Image 1 (cartoon, rainbow over the protein chains, first blue to last red):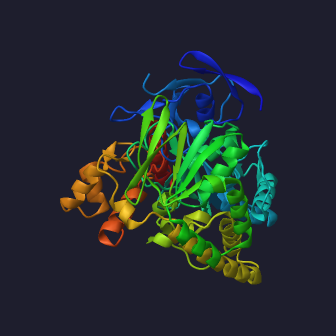
Image 2 (cartoon, chains in turn orange, yellow):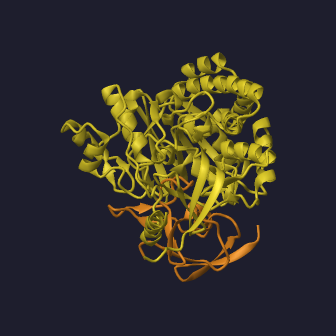
Image 3 (cartoon, each protein chain N blue to C red):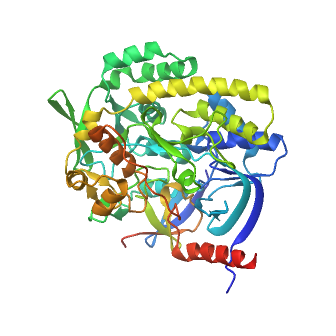
Length: 81
Length: 451
């Protein structure tokens, strides 16, 4: 797979084009994707678009990172930040 | 009134879901030069079973080979819409979808629902920790993204799917520390010899040959804790406890059909424990209502081979052709369903386990509702799903009950001997930006006003 650059919370990381964003984030060492209602750290859980635990913001829209393919130049922000 | 920016499209047949059942049907329509549209919310077709990755395509079974063949003959077609979740169904049978964020209203003459299934879980304290994920997520990361999420893993739960994921984890270069099957081994051996199936049996033997030293039986997870960047798992069996440490804990306790869209379309559903829980009801030819048909996991958990057969059968029923072939498909389908019923019944947590989920366990991950709250609501006399929802906020988060409702269903069924009634479903069935949803609503009103 071709390598592409994406931006996570202001920092550039290398990802593989077409892989799921959640995989790119985990590979880059980001494990805690969001805080739950009760303040717990949450991460990827179901991996197939069902549980909504892996929500992040991409170019201003909230997406499920486990079913969102990586695209060159995408701007990613974690929900809590 | 300003007409909202929603494109409308008429089509003869709409297929919702591009997994094995969906592409099996689409292939029949394509061969018969029928006007159809297939929508799937994933960026690829092939569903959970194929999980598109050009670098990872094992063609070890006949079912998988057929799946890849169907997929490659369909993908890229202009009537295959990926990244297109369905969000609503209006009274007139008009379906609201978002194609890569752009709203469309599809007006189909017939609909085939092939929305597949999701994993089911028997929760325990700590199942919400990062580094605890579903077995399906581990498989998805490996297959779709070529990413191995940890160096070592413990897989726990029930069912042959855990073995498949363990096998793939090792093939991808990881180390499986243990595969902990809830059900006792004696029961398992009797079961396997009673219902041996050639294709599934050989697949199982391949997994067991690689993993047999790592298999354990009858242990359940008491809790998982974070410990210096790793996960500490406490197992229990007949009062005995042991602790294991792992980088990643992967869990799975079977599957539940994705019935929400079918419910929204007014299809009848029923609870069938032996088929994974709530399923869409169809006749023998997979017809649900006048214009709606269903195929694959959504009619009952049975795996890819059942989905392949049902997709084809539903498509031929819709076309009203090949009566002989339909009859033979119905016959093989009945065999598949029988096999599935035995498998689902066997690989299922016992009622006792559903009843003994500890109070402090989070059940609804979206709203952080704990088992204590649900017990309390049932003890206070709340009976109906809607009442328990009102009292506890379960099923009210982003996932709309897709993870917690199967848990609550199994808990209440174990408690009372019968399942609660199904959840009521309202659009949007996937969370969408409010602006987009308003556009759909306005467009519906405007087009009705014009008629």
